[in-house]
Image (tube, rainbow, N blue to C red; front, top):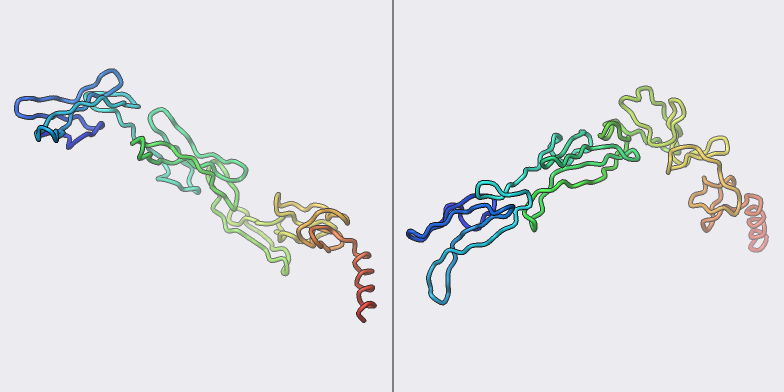
Length: 228
């Protein structure tokens, strides 16, 4: 019989067969664990002993199991939180407008909790360890810019100039709204690499290369004469 229902390193137990009694005990940072087993040859029960490693130390016949705790109740990018196991402490932080989120997880192979880290994308940006909870304004390129009057509630997913939120790819004064850093950049000259027409000052991107407007016009005229 045993009081800890088997081989449980986190629970101190007593194992006995008749008057033969053994109690789990600590040995340095390991645990001497007693539990019931069965001998197939003799067809008798016997008490088996194993020495188990305690990664967090051993105390009063059981391995110390440090709990993982967190202040934001899990993986929540909109709430800044602190996660800790013992003295190992990590606090959510901003990185490149996203949030580095720490939360509790569990390793079933090692049979212990650990702190996991993920990067959560914040569409409206990050501030003080949490994603900003704002309404995203994504203006349509056919309709043009939208005005934003309350920056505490709304976030421009485009290029912001004063209170005007311009759509990605919008052309203004020889520049276009660049998706990568949400700023206006100069349109490209002929023979530059491109992916979209609006990147080129001719508004012509063919085979991933900016094409001169005059050259394209000459080609169209030639093509019209050839098949006209």
